[in-house]
Image (cartoon, one colour):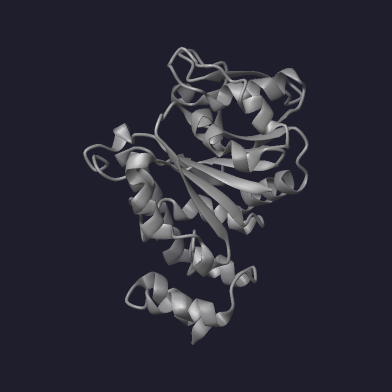
Length: 288
């Protein structure tokens, strides 16, 4: 399975901070926001990752991430010059995703929790149709919303409804089988003038192949695409690290734990980070 992370939007909700910078390169506490979706994919064993970015930010992503070699993964930065929605970004990777199973992530989403990771790992290891991940929210009007019957089966998906039928929003991570690229090319423009991921999910729903994994409320999810939610996620990471003494989204740590890199490579990575709390964490736990 490969991973695709969509980071191609114009980040208008975070302007003026994002006039000349992609929001996924802004800090979420002690590391760039983009580290968190990368870390999720690495945790479930995905090492081939494609990050679709606004063409204006291509060089910035290359400088920040390189090709992933220092973490033992394969990172490819893909340009999107059209910026027409989530599936518009997905379709920029068709040469890589054809006949592949894909975990597709919206780059401004932040997830945390053992139950969520367990559900994601199951979906990645048992790709059959499509999996979406639902999370209850107070005001679901800004999200894709899933309606479901008493048995928990998805009956309807609506993107940003004015009058939601449930409070179960569909979060920004999706697991698809190898049919996804063929189906994604059939997605048409929505009324908002975008190619919407909800419409791809509806195709799987119409085939009876869409599964909803409900993320328990005790887990943590946020669309970190506004100043308020980015700060809220940052505060959560800060407090959790202080409480648990464990890092979140530390791709150097994950790479070493998974055996993607050697201790020698970890030492090299640490040398660039030694003056930071992030680097000190690596030293104290793995290099001392």
